[in-house]
Length: 166
Image (tube, rainbow, N blue to C red; front, side, top):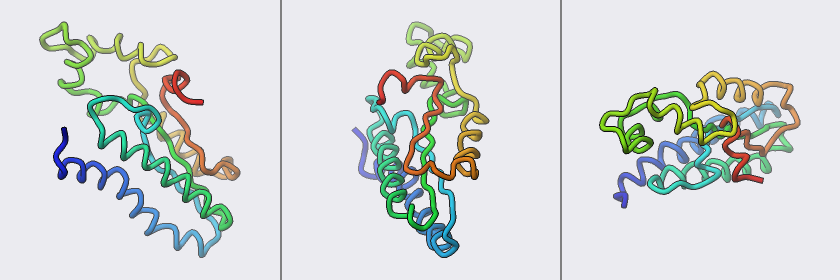
């Protein structure tokens, strides 16, 4: 189980950080009667996994916070949306601990060793999503092309969420 400090650290970064960003940005956007807010959650903010309770709770919280903010700010021309990435090709995925979790049969699994098992997590046959794919979703939601999209969560997860969300 986590310590109280470990819990606080994760929640402070992932959820309170988004709250603080909203507090800083929203007054200016309300005054201008226009704005776009895009927060980052996670696939684990839509479907819990064991072993990361603070991360899961904080990422679910980001979605709830942003949905509530979308309702409160819609009348001011401010859109609030969330991107929920899946397994993005970053250090959070590419590390020895996760590699060992994915391939416990190997003493020192490599990136290549985990690519196959990682790909089985997605509907599309890719082991991970590139950061640029997440960026593309954020840019779209921040654009005028998304002017009538608010309170939504866009999953960028190679189809993994097709298995567990409505």
